Image (cartoon, rainbow, N blue to C red):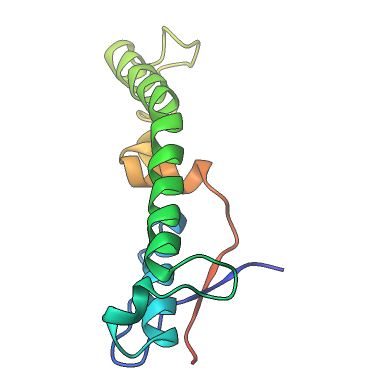
Length: 127
């Protein structure tokens, strides 16, 4: 079952970005807004001994860690794409008659992150 991410708080809501890692941060903020009417309460201890601020920070830390771990993959993919485009496929053994840029779908960091991150999350459009 895919994880449902809350995007609605009491007085605001977010639209999913389509990038799971970013949507998870937005969901942490929306959950905080749904759980507490005032941001001044976000530092109160909850039943598990953590605060909302700590939870938001933890999700942000996890996202930053995942992005940093993917940096070599992104760099390698970009280098391979450049090499392919420079040689029209000869360097990677693809005939020039095939599609001119087989890596076009990987042309942004967000595309790479979406392909490499956990799939199947969906936004919660309810309360």
